Length: 129
Image (cartoon, rainbow, N blue to C red):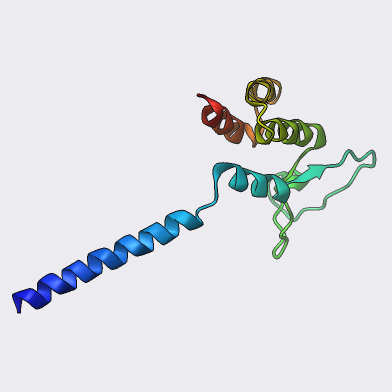
């Protein structure tokens, strides 16, 4: 009976290690995850027309804060902000590490309130020797 228990535990241990090794190999790299995030962002277009938004009783709410059920639109970001981040990523991918570090640092300085600021800081940390 003891041998059966020991063999069962050994089999479970080896099986879980094999599963863990399989999961590690399937994990996307930092740059792949960042690239897929950037691709999901939509650049915000400058519109010269004014849009009106109607509301139903309650506090004043800007049109960006209204949630429409079933509305699955991409997160928007300023086009020049997105272009600056993409340029920094391209430098990092083409082995221009010092230039990429400078580009990410400039991005953080120029766009401190950006939703991509955290990603830029992670990229800077990743590019450190």
